Amino acid sequence: MPSDKAPVIVYTGKGKGKTTAALGIVLRAVGHGHRVGMIQFIKGEWYYGELTSSKRLEPEFEMIAAGKGFVGIIDDDHSIEEHQKAAQEAIELVREKLASGAYDVMILDEVNYAVKLNLITVDDVLGIIAAKPDKTTLVLTGNHAHEKVVEAADLVTEMREVKHPYQKGIKARKGIDF
Image 1 (spheres, rainbow, N blue to C red):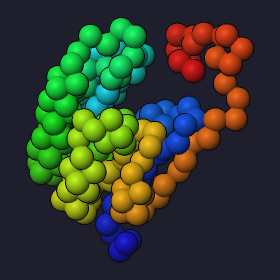
Image 2 (spheres, helix red, strand yellow):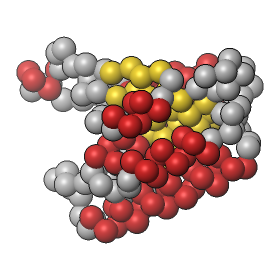
Image 3 (cartoon, helix red, strand yellow):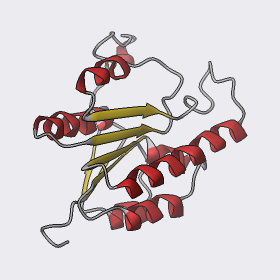
């Protein structure tokens, strides 16, 4: 990778912190006056604290919840076709946003999991990687990063769960969301 070409970063693994690591990049980039976009592939219909806090970072940060929620979770009432349609629309949105050249950083949150769930294809993701502007850092999050995506990336970090409060029956806390 030439030093003037922005990297492709992957945060994956079964541990917590993938989206949080990407949001850390948001804070750093916005602090330098960079324009950042985040497209969420899975979390679209649930409320997360970052949906509200992200508004405080506008106009430098734009976050779009494009998914329909997690496939097969107890309160999921969408067909697989609805999930696939939403994910395909998210892919098209990413392509448009990247083609605009307006972003220094583009984050595809839970895109790896969307591939694992067959909502989109690995070729969709590889096409985005190949087409990204040289100046744009691309961050891909989600468990189950495909080996071809790992190979195409410049930096890959795997989050590994060592211990989780859920194992003791402790539920997530608002603002912490473990």
